Image (cartoon, rainbow, N blue to C red; front, side, top):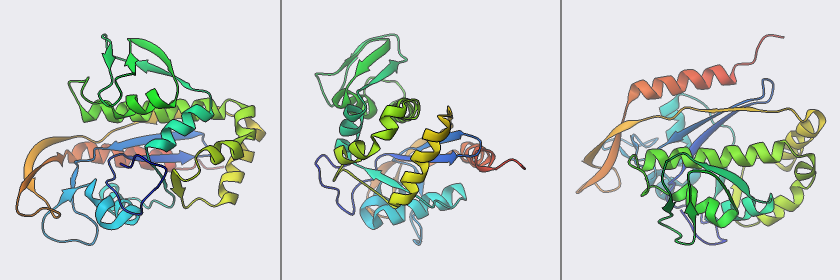
Length: 254
């Protein structure tokens, strides 16, 4: 949740999406975890807290370790981005075709210059960001916003991986993102992924499963003396997400 070209070490982690990527099977699974998910921050005792507060208390490390506890996985890699990264990335690949899945038009709450009509809407980075941030236009609020964010990610992946020209120019894309993202992927990691895709130009199967919960007003680890809106996890939905993660990450026997 930062709006400039700077990327502070700690900030609210308002968007938390797990990408399980299996290059052997060409499967990708996305899991959106709502920012208000009421979880035990890793290494803490007492009150649980909103997941988004992990980013302000302990940065990306605490966010990752808390999600690892929740989903019973190890997260080896991360990409951390701010608002401008979304704008610059979508512009760098020439825009995307967003599908608005509601039967009415709406103007985005965060950018009144961006209006979406039912069906396909071709947009650049500015309106792609507004779409990814939109929740006021939907009855389900943050849940629908998470689905919008996943759609933007999927569209970017689809466009980049299906174009040898875009993949070959990945250095230009990374330059456009300079200062707006950080990752623990090494340059060799990124280069190897790019070479693999150029070699086979395979299509990827991208799916999503999202955890759910119910709203409540409760004290948190960060603010123990007042009640804040939180989302109590539906542990059945968490169990489904864990099962799907294991399925996607499993490599078939040779």
